[in-house]
Length: 255
Figure 1 (tube, rainbow, N blue to C red):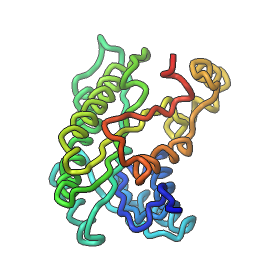
Figure 2 (figure 1 turned 180 degrees about the vertical axis):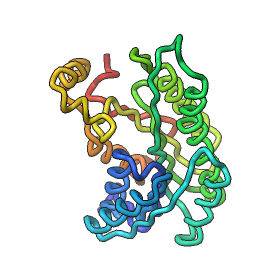
Figure 3 (figure 1 turned 90 degrees about the vertical axis):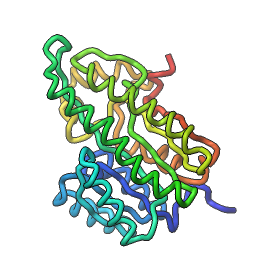
């Protein structure tokens, strides 16, 4: 029987591959047979990630630097991937930024920065990798949304929630536009995931209890919780699914 979840021979690019979530998703793709390119601004950390993944999976992993807010840099990244592998089958946009400020005090320079990374960056990478997929009439794109893309939240998250709402509609609109080219565009929508940037929540019993209380499964998410959903959306198992956001949230959005 064919394993619908295997990614053998596929070329996957993970943007934000030096971050806690991106690194873990790159590992999951490699574990399932894909050749993986990890990309972000932090080249030194990317090289470490590539070595770590290769040691664990024996797969081919390449580290490339990119600034997703710079369209020329993204175009150059595409050229480098094509020069090495000849094609791109899977794009995972795992980058993300949150700057928390109260709405009445929100500096517009911070607003612009978070939109440049989360929204403009997502569109630029989709545009340039999508062109390759359009020409070959095949591809899988997985964007990073959040439960905050459909549910507001306090604590200075106006900009973050707005960017994730934008990612949701970029995902849906590109799915419609590119459906004739057999390009599947979906998103992952996690609740809070414990990464190096949020580890302080797990380490603080009161904070951890507060965040667990809003999750029906009463647990905090970890990056590994996203691997199965990412591999599913990258594989042939999801060939009739596009324009959707898969919420990995312990039941948060069910109520």
